[in-house]
Image (cartoon, rainbow, N blue to C red; front, side, top):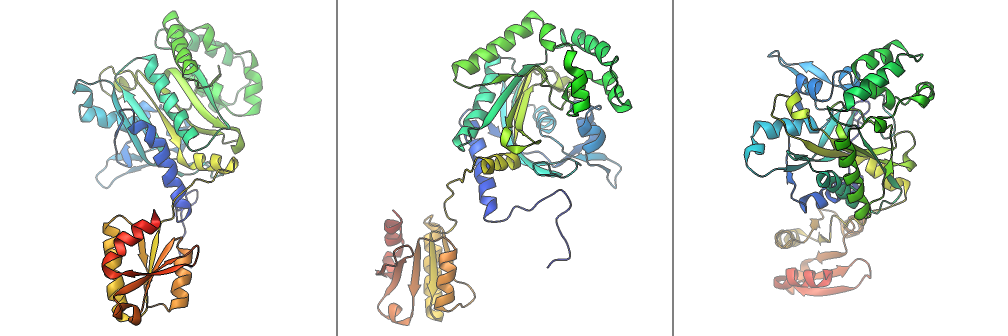
Amino acid sequence: MSTFQAPKGTYDLIPPNSATYLAVREAIAAPLKNSGYGYIETPGFENVELFARGVGESTDIVTKEMYAFETKGGDQLALRPEGTASVLRAALEANLHKAGNLPVKLWYSGSYYRYERPQKGRYRHFSQVGAEAIGAEDPALDAELIILADQSYRALGLRNFRILLNSLGDKECRPVYRAALQDFLRGLDLDEDTRRRVDINPLRVLDDKREAVQKQLAGAPMLRDYLCEACKAYHEQVRELLTAAGVAFEDDEKLVRGLDYYTRTTFEFVHDGLGSQSAVGGGGRYDGLSEMIGGPALPSVGWALGVDRTVLALEAEGITLDIPAATAVYAVPLGEEARRVLFRAVTELRRAGVATDFAYGGKGLKNAMKSANRSGARLALVAGERDLAEGVVQLKNLESGEQTPVALDAVVDEVRRALG
């Protein structure tokens, strides 16, 4: 056993389970690739200030969960705790918004890091697939992203998830609500940290999961009663577009999300089979984030879906993805000459696009055939001295046991035919 183990709160993705994670990432990305979203990849760490400004200095992510450090050169950096701020920073730096085709539509996949108490569904290192549409204010864009996320989950076979939807207003109407909420919250029996949050970002108190706090919030003013006419109309259009597309959602007036940059549309995907960590993904509109990090006004919307929690949701529904075996053909040589001949055949099959493996290490026939069966291959290529003398190899169907001699110069064609 190794002296070292994965750090607390992290995990290793290893076969065969890693194939499920890859399949989930590909399923989430597929509708995005089909809808004009281009792939973007950003560094695993950024300037601390990017997240302090964008995510919000009062958020738990920045105050408690971010991995921040100083480099040997004195730079203050942080491992990325979320994707949106990094993607927007990269888009601004590359002037993608000046190319004349707004919105800039981007998708990404990667690892993110937060210092949290490890538990099932909540890790210190986790994987997300995200999408951002930068530079356009349009209810159809908000609806599009929600529909694409719904489409990817349904393509995976998931059914027991819900979409929660809310509007957080904008810079015109939210300040009035913010003041009313602060007045209400200051009259409650709250701890010192929460009282501090009331002054900095009172909407975050609505997101407090503690039962003692939630009980006191029973009579809190609702944002829907303070929305301006423009925000009401915008939100209603999003709702109408989702309904017309056949995407069910639930209005959740307390839905805030954990990041400060959201405006207007905010949404969350939850799965009731995951216990306390029920959120599998979410997002919303962030019209002021570009200006917060030094860019021009660029109204934008996006989401991130958790790969880890999506896999847990699949397990909760008893869904097993149909993942092809990593190997279709397994070559078993008997003797040195057969090793040379079959290794050449394996190379040709791989070049022809056939997933093929080889019995390495000089295994005997019995052990090599065990390896062939364990690989999940449908066919085995077996050759010994007698076969080579006759200019053939044996093509064996590992499911039926049927074995057929195949001419050496016809191996690729015969294997393709047998695999269908």
